[in-house]
Length: 287
Image (tube, rainbow, N blue to C red; front, side, top):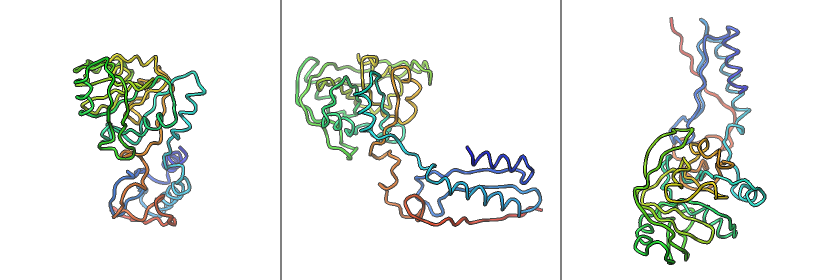
């Protein structure tokens, strides 16, 4: 990136001894939150101060580029209808590895509302629904309410469907390339069919970063047009051979949408606030 190239150039030219750019974790509600640049001078502070100012100005000029944006869910699902390739969607708003509960119904409700009827696999954490399906037994049709108990951005799904499978302790072996050979298991589960949509209900939340999570319960990822995972990035390598992988901009507690939080200490900061460029400098001389 241009900013890092500039800092390396300053060191190579002998203007400073070293430069470090400390990126800011954008969800820290602490006073003084912001980007920091540290430069070690070659015996004097003036040149180091100039280098820091140059880099901070570059960071400010690129501020909109540094705000990560994810593809729109509507756009991605529209592409599915027009393409022969399947799509594997990372649900950005409900990433289990980031603390999400794995029970968001946002994508499922979107599919149902828009009548997107293609072979779809979508996992949802709901122990009560799993027990209901297990009591009903595989092969039976039931009315079921599930999901949306912890993730409140979308309501629970209430629908009639078929229990196509139940089980527990299904072994999972990662095919890789990421963490290939890793062994784990899916505890108690049920597969609930709503037309062409197969909902994998579990009594534990999982991130689903490998296709074998679906194979373990009898769902072949090669046959699906849409697969939803509860991961933002870690699923990408292992699903790349199945289809097109994308992390979709969905709402939820693990979304990168900073507007959803009640900030009390970090204000003001960009992009939540429209502020002017006003860097603060601290100089420490060592003798």
